[in-house]
Amino acid sequence: QVQLVESGGGLVQAGGSLRLSCAASGRTFNLYSVAWFRQAPGKEREFVASISGTGSSIDYVDSMKGRFTISINNAKDTAYLQMNSLKPEDTAVYYCAARRVFTTSRASNDYLYWGQGTQVTVSS
Image 1 (cartoon, one colour):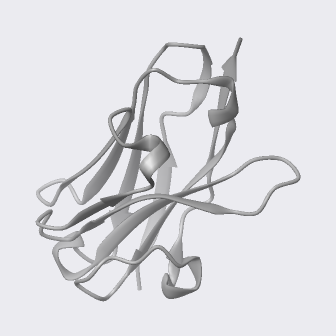
Image 2: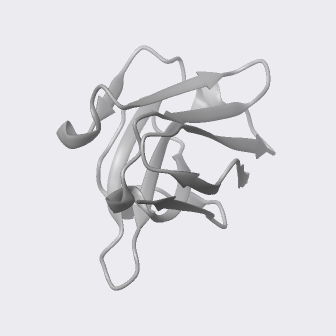
Image 3: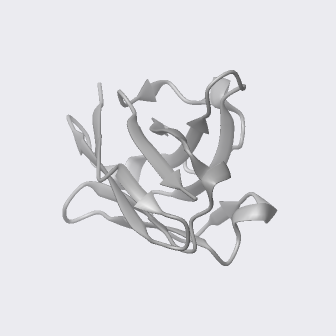
């Protein structure tokens, strides 16, 4: 069993940065792949980025490449999402998810463990 807790969300002006954290307890991340998803009001949950537990495989949605960076620190059982050059359209609840499979996936249904979400609001 894995418990995930996100933190780091908040209100930021357009062009600003935030770093989200996803702390895991119960298992270590090197047994899992981890992903970030987001859901804006009235929209479907969408994939943002994923990383294998070893950090050797990383995947991003094209629109976020160059602005967002996913990383993992197995010593701390924590994954991160560094978000730069934020835009108002990045406003959403951001969720961390994990699965006990080494390979990454963009499908939310492939992830068994989810955090409670952290709100990110970008003002124009």
